Image 1 (cartoon, rainbow, N blue to C red):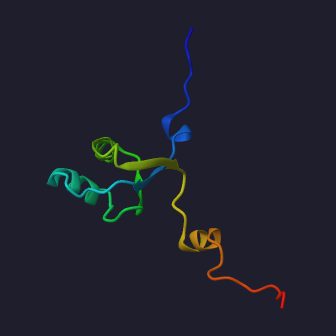
Image 2 (image 1 turned 180 degrees about the vertical axis):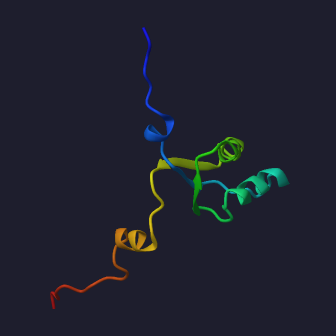
Length: 96
């Protein structure tokens, strides 16, 4: 009996969404270099990287420091701004 598998490109995501959750302060230079390779310089900064072996290796090196999600597309600036709430506040009524 032969099993048929879906092709890896059809079922897999195209990008990793990588967020730096812990600081690289106090770590050796190779950990800091791996974070910079992924495009992560500050805490809570998010970077989108293509799914490939070199990216996966850098993620494995920093596995305790980063949060990783699989996504199909990179959101545009308009998508990110649309998902955020409006800035400030609005006074609706007064009880005076």
